Length: 269
Image (cartoon, rainbow, N blue to C red; front, side):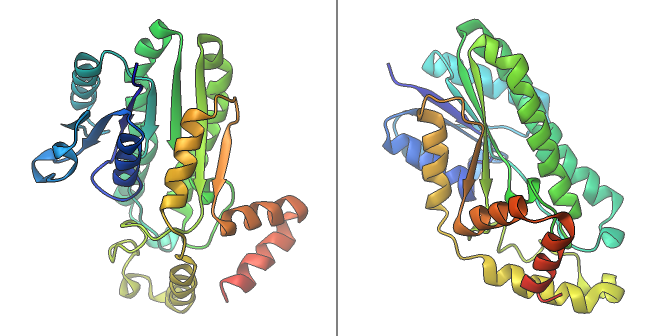
């Protein structure tokens, strides 16, 4: 029997690439997105259900889950991929922007996960794959808001293992470094420089360094997600990208002060 994956944020970036990959691997795919009416490719594929899901709207979540179960009979894997980003000096990222980051990236993930837990518990199986980030393991300049959401995801996911493993439910964290995705190249990613003039010089250096780091092939992340969904292990964390692996190793070897100085030098701050 074919397995089924539900993917949030499947209209762009990692979500879309994963929808295609799992389809190619002959899985059933529930590809969810904010506006399915604009989709012209995924909805043409066999065994792919394209449906509307807003991670901040529990009604759309429940409807997508029920549509998926009605279509395919069972959901085996949840890929919590949907997310937004906003970077810039903490002082100038507005309260509204910070709350939106947490509402989508963290509470949105919680909403979708809770909607699927009864189904997974009933089946005594299921895999929850949460897309985190290297910024969920270490702090970076001008990424305090986004990084906070990823730190929260890391902590929640690690804790949930103890509660959900006894029901046959596995937890996985995908931790990408810098990859060339729609989010990374979004011109609205950064707070406007004119709004943060006191930080402008450092921020310009940080933007240049960050843009220079965005070189990874997103397919590496797709490969890692597929591995997490199929390796049958209890492994929790899956770092992806040479930059992520190297930074994690450096953080392991250094104290906090030495690591901070390394980041300052690397980003020419």
